Length: 201
Image (cartoon, rainbow, N blue to C red):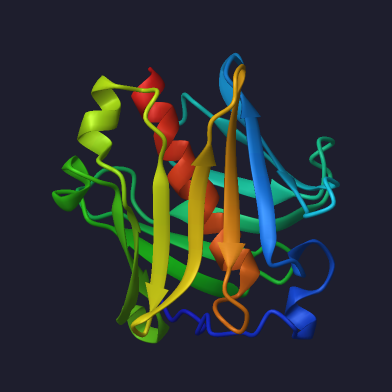
């Protein structure tokens, strides 16, 4: 599958609306049944995006919506295969079905920390998205906070940091101006956070 490059400046028309910010806050409650809800807020505290990720789903496919009604999808995320060690996940524009980008998990590396390769046109590796904290240790000590960062062409373009809160999970996403398409960065951040669910089962 040919994937579009992700080096789209945030100031472009592509980054308008809910994707026009440099910083986001992602929140989800500790306790939800048969799924996990993610609410994404802009720097002013306004909710701009919503995701409900199913816990029990054979194939990992989900969408980013404008709000809790889930009537207007903006971005679609889907794994190419159900089983495997190195699974490729594609990110699409939900309205045009145009590819935004893709990441490929590194199964063996992810034993110690979640790691993905960022793929460009022709599935060429152009960067990495990985957890900076020790995932294995965090499985034993769930109170440890998570951190992730993305690099493309040797440059850091996004960073995710967990914030300690009671009764909720909260994360901040920071984007470097002129870096990747914000839709791709947000999708990858949410992909990483869904992996947190696996540790809570």
